[in-house]
Length: 180
Length: 441
Image (cartoon, rainbow over all chains, first blue to last red; front, top):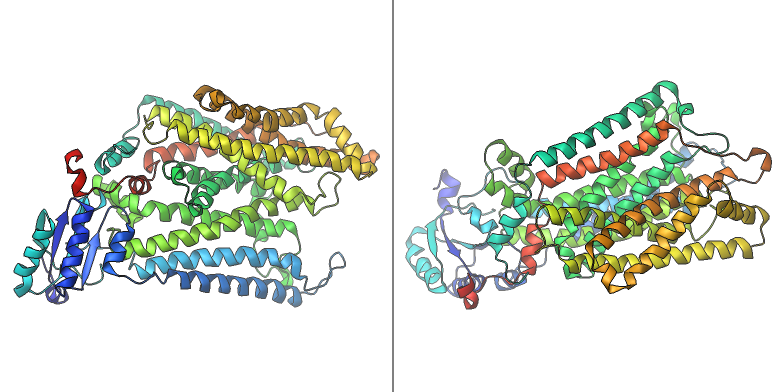
């Protein structure tokens, strides 16, 4: 399966599961056995998968916060600076009229927050991806679960036994890249 | 839905995307003809000027702005169902949110046309955008019309992002089931989605934040639209109740539009297992709520017109109730606040024909509401010398019909090109396959 040097060094096995509890059991057993570089595939998100893999919370929220702050700053700068740049009094109102400007500030806060949230999601989940790794099976988007385990050639037997004992239906070698 | 399996969910939902039959093409053709007629009417406007509309001093805003406000309003229920109900963890939203969100996006595509059409010179629409124009002049940020540009454009961008983000995992399912050039397009939309734990983790986090951002946004948008009117000094417009009144009305009309579209959708594509009577009943209950708020707003408007002891305000009100536009006014009262009260009767809100009929009436009523607010406000301003009556011409009516057809055109294409129900969210509501229920598998 491996096509180049990087992929060669990242050999692994992928097990297919029909049931969610089998997948969770496999993750637990492999982690106990010292295999920590795991990657699950599932048709739906499930909080138990994240909990078993002990993943930290997603950092997307910091992107959202940064986007919102940036949006608010942009809104304030845009409205105040352009009004000062062309100081034409309209309706007897001050040149820098904060209350109406807050509407623009609010809209840009949301806009930039949303854009950076999307950017943060794509960046953190390494999307978009042109090539899909060999460990992926279309049925992982349909009704089956998958677990990719990073292991060297000599460990294949041990990992296969562990995956089998947890209830894996099929196990194939797949040189999945580290970042899927 | 407990008996469904993941595999069956895929098959059932993707069935709607199969090659369409002659009925679909007939409907599409009729729709395209109406769109073409609307485009012709617009072209006629551009050629001859806005004088071909019924606009007459002092009514310089009429059908076109009515359509704008109406379609922005239609968009609101989609965000209510997809974002607000998501934040409140309302489980029944799963199978209807995709359609509602599509309504939002397409309604905004429709609403966005009207400010441009109303310019008369649509080729200079970029003057609305904030950039340094002649001699360093920028747009006037104190003007509600500029707030409107920002609010509606932000709403459109965020809704499109939210819609397509929600689609990504579903696109992976479609990608795996198609081949050839179709697969290439769906693979592009899926962005290489594989459903790994890393992808799901960031996806779910992003989705919550997009929902959390969309919630205050949706409330701000129709508030800003209402301020287009409320910030002026026109009697009947200059009122603090306008923002909540418009937001409630927007959700009211949007829910009615979602029901109008869901009922045929579920019937034609046999999606009864997913869009159940319970879903429609819950939407009907939400309509009772928004209908009561709208009815309350009508009552408050009446009361304040009288209590304020303000002569122009009161004459505008009596004109609205008894003048040239009395019929649209009474249609508005009847269809928006009285007819929806029928949903208090369980027999009516659980009957599909009744639901469909009442939803259509609310759509008509809400369009009339926008028309009544805009036109009667302008027709009887302060100075009796300049009172006038607006009568729509064939161009006004053609552009309005064209806009409806334009909206349905997007919706018809959506049915065939994208899954109308979120596959992933429906699966999430099902119990995951476990060893104990092996027998069922």
